Amino acid sequence: MDPLSPEEISRYHRHILLPEIGGQGQQRLKAARVLMIGAGGLGAPALMYLAAAGVGTLGIVDDDRVSLSNLQRQVIHDNGTIGEEKTRSAAQAIARLNPHVTVLRFEGRFDARFAGDYLGGFDLLVDGSDNFDTRYAAADAAEHGRIPLVTGAVGRFDGSLTVLKPYEANDRGEPNPRYRDLFPEQPPAGLVPACSEAGIIGALTGVIGTLMAMEAIKLITGIGEPLIGRLLLYDALSARFDTIRYKRRKATAAP
Image 1 (cartoon, rainbow, N blue to C red):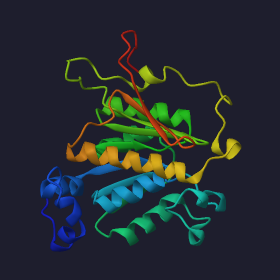
Image 2: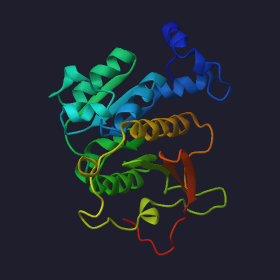
Image 3: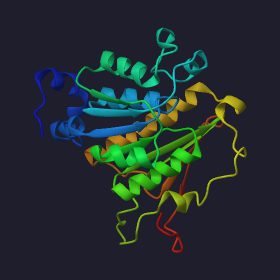
């Protein structure tokens, strides 16, 4: 692993003080290559905290442009970047925050073809997308590529996230669950309204996006217990967190 420069040691001093991370953990963050799907409500805080943490390479996949209605929650963008590609706006914000981070921009949508071309260049996938097609594509691609996946979702006042490593077994020798063990099939079109239709409280995306960044940091540094086989639920109105455990379904077929 590349050594940390004196400037990096100063920048990440509060991390390095933590025995669980230390210099070696910070070097792992520097060496990490993380692909983020979406630079929107969830991607914005996740990207900012991963960049601040010193993740060496961040890839961003998004085909959208910044609009005024995004700014209520997508805090990586601002008035000055309205109309710009979100990948460009996010890359500019990351450069201002931490010049030690390399940003790779992909103006497009994440799908099986994209995964086949690019996912192999990364060692962690974080899905902050806002549609089920992308979520299932991300889960299938991560499982096929044996890459950990952090995935989250939000709606109105509620959010959730989990971590997937279905190509590994738990400490009891049982295969870890797949995304389809949690969500066997997509809901019918139109059943779950988009944020543009139902609305969403902006700070909620900050809560879930930041938790996604925390799970990514845990996976990279090897600390703590990632949310594998556990779905974390957050109800913003009642300020309540709940955790649901889920397992591999014996009848689930491989994608």
